[in-house]
Image 1 (cartoon, rainbow, N blue to C red):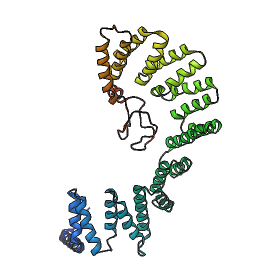
Image 2 (tube, helix red, strand yellow; image 1 turned 45 degrees about the vertical axis):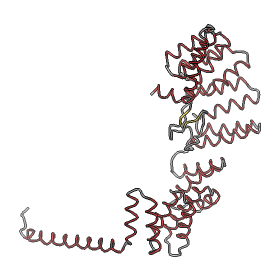
Image 3 (tube, one colour; image 1 turned 90 degrees about the vertical axis):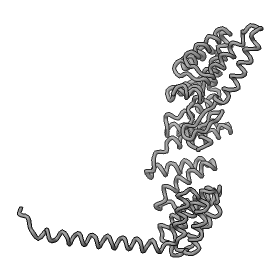
Image 4 (spheres, rainbow, N blue to C red; image 1 turned 30 degrees about the horizontal axis):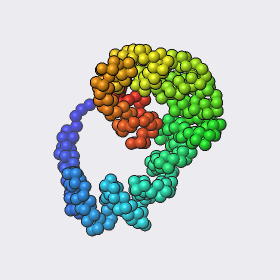
Length: 391
């Protein structure tokens, strides 16, 4: 292909056009920035310097001078909500919704923000009503998640199931684990009312939603035990091993009590020992220790604790070993040994806690739903010191 010489003369023309276009854009940008109130930039500067109080004051002045600053209203409302000033946030977003000229998409945004304000303020009935009006809009998924949170707070588990199922069907992510837990909550309520048939029907739905739901398996055993079917209850609790071996510590005492009830305590002890060999656990060890002490004597209990401490060296284990040693210690060393055991025991109380893997919230008892972050199944079935040793 031959080179056309006229292209050389066109290059300066294209360059000049580009320069003119850039100048126009710069002039437009400068012009637009000059129309913004000075307080707007002051507010932004305060935000960047992490001075939210001064930022709010600056933005309030801007809103007073120029009520048309819709985005600034949203920013101001969010700042109020984050600071816990929910009444002021609610007024900001209500004022936005009262504007007749507000486009539909911004109406939805304002309504969603208002629902968040109500939720933060604990006005759950108003929040629910507000979010329900957003179902089917572009904020439908976000509103659905907020409604799910509300139903959990109010312990309306059937509505929580319906909401979670709707979210899942809309493609907003799987909710099977939560749905199974909601059925477990309903089943537990029925067990309190002694309606075991209804509880078992709900637990079947829980396991249909999540076959690995340990809580459902445990509650099935509890329901069967309440009906007097001890053997079936034992079979249900043993299924926990197939779902999650570490969780067998949660049913160890139930299993031992059940085997005693059917007259086979040695079989129960052997089963718990096999679990302990497969998944060491302080909670499981405590149950086994008491049973060994009762059935096999002090020496066997001492040997058990010594072997387990060598295998998994923890202060919690040392506390139990000292407790075992005290049982047959010579009278002259018992006071000193008791003093050491009390010191160790006092310290281990801080370590003998469960810890949420999502938010780090620690608790003395095991929770299926974290009290700190409200997430489900985030507590490992081991104490914090055990987790540190394993990691």
